[in-house]
Length: 411
Image (cartoon, rainbow, N blue to C red; front, side, top):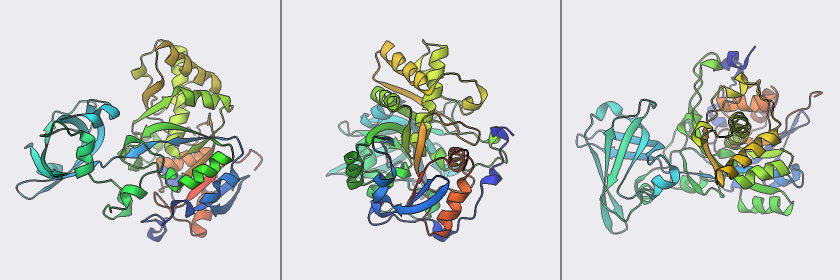
């Protein structure tokens, strides 16, 4: 059976509502840690993570921050329109769009779209002692996008869009929590090391890390590096097709600095990935390096990794050679970091190139994230989840954590 023929129904399990953590623990590093190694599950507390990692390991974190991406406008008729920011459109760059003055455009999902006939939506907001008028207009959407093109404008030249969002936006906590965003979520739904704005969902494996845990990792000689993958709303998109070949994976934007590539090579292409978003970023590097090998002059915008690329092309490079190709490419083009996008789907049949240990939460049934875990554990995901369910682990974004090590062939 090919990867595309895998039936998503084989990745189902019963997840009672009481197992879903609606709120985080008061201390983020006090969550439970399921350790799966040598084919056996065990448990500990997250603040002891360093005890389960080899000295001198390389850990890679996703440093993205969740933006207050949910905006609400009230029409004169009383209808409430929700505008959910998904992707920068004009300018099509995360860093620049947050610095924009007076106007910018985003690709958005619209709640109550049928009630928005095309009129300009207006909202008065207070920022400090000033009253600012924020407007939203629907523009013609690009043919390549299923989302609406919304142009925002505001009548204060010295305010950036980032400041507008801070004043009026709402943090988009996951829909399966079935509750409104609370003020505490602005802190608890961010990692302590997040610094690059752009995600509409948190890289939740990182929510367990505290400053104290990071210090203990440093004291053990564990190297920490960061990549950026801006998590899109597609991370919550259910697999509705019976076979995963019918599922369209969402595209996410990534940034990887040159020094991270060098560090992975120096550690023998052996990485501890914090979260599935870090996994998708790191593993995409191999296929980007392969593209460069085939066409050293390829434009950066063509380095995008397609969904099925890992399964449809023969790749003969070693993992280190692929990374060196990217480093050489950056040097030839005078670049310090790689900026591109990935649509990679990691599912059974995928061979991991760099990630040898994975820190991750417990994911929804029949999700692409569970497929990723199954591929990593060579099909042994159910042993881990059965243990977690029977030992009072908390599930999903605000739930407990796990450290997974793939079983050897003789386990």
